[in-house]
Length: 219
Image (cartoon, rainbow, N blue to C red; front, side, top):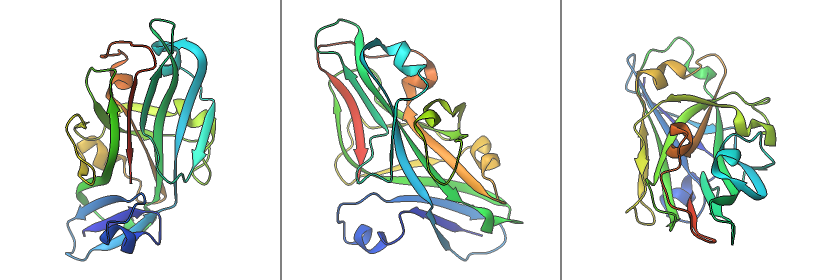
């Protein structure tokens, strides 16, 4: 039973025409049928922790200070270094997206892929430029809140995606592992967070530099 789940209803034709606008595809392949069903995500957004000046660890462990629901171009990774204080940073982002996957009730899921359309990035902080897909437990799956920033799980649901050399318009595929397949809720909502791999490793792999950034966004 293959199922295609896409974010943001109404953008399918824009995606086909390669017009700017976020598209996410969650492709679920189940055993019972060869029919493809498309499901649009109910909502998405990015979560942010900001500070006038703080260590990388403080931002990583923060409770969240802002949320942007259904943004035009979300930034799943956005780390910004302080302009003058060595080793300190001012911003860290995570991306959150929810799907109503209840129509998969009774289905056996064999494989799944989330596909995102790469738009741009800055990598002047160096280190590993990887994003990872994990679970999330937001307070509400209807409208996300700043406090959902720290609701991420630590189990990675797919191999990480390295965006060091990706060009605009490239597809970024998160192919689910067994843990990711088991996480899909076939009787309700399934919520994911995409974040910097360093945050799951709990160790910053880059090198601080005044006002340098590591960010990535998608169309």
